Image (cartoon, rainbow, N blue to C red; front, side, top):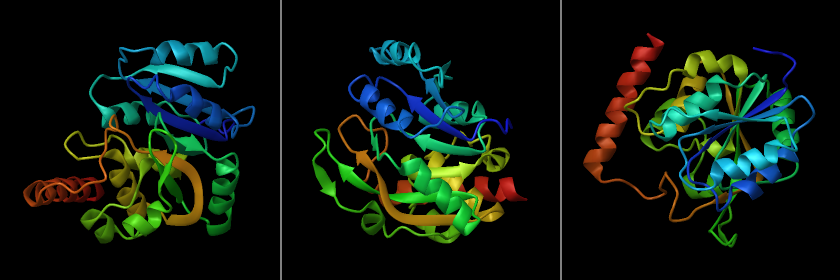
Length: 237
């Protein structure tokens, strides 16, 4: 790990032309000179890559890398793997960061001596209208391995973790549902999670989202949890 890089932001993109420019603009306002934004693009067919490359021409802190073309989990894994920072922030391609997000999260790391910070968010629609005031309240968010296996409250776009945790969470198992739940529970095994009540992003929900806020059917839920538990127990043995 390169100690010269303070903050890395790991972003996974795929056909995100509608929101990507504005999201990147809110991120880079949070970054200092030696920070970086690592974007893994998973074979976008729209103008996503063109938009990113135009921004890179004016800001060399942004790095665009080829994704594995295997879906969102592996795309985030690829971005995380290429991050060099002491702290790694996760980012979707369509949200909006508050201007003091990084500063407040780094202060939380220092104050609580933790290895992962997850903060609250306002949920907005595709037109930036607020639809949920607090994601934490909506999901009853909080720490706990069993709690977050039963009902996940780790949301990747609100998470940051110390670079040293990377070797614990990677590789991300191919057969689990999502990367953020995995990172959260693995971190709790080897470190400490802090849930920060500040709402530091506007979390956008729209028809193109990969994840869903709705529940699966009972049989799929049971299967997903069984797979997650099996992978968790194998990883920590």
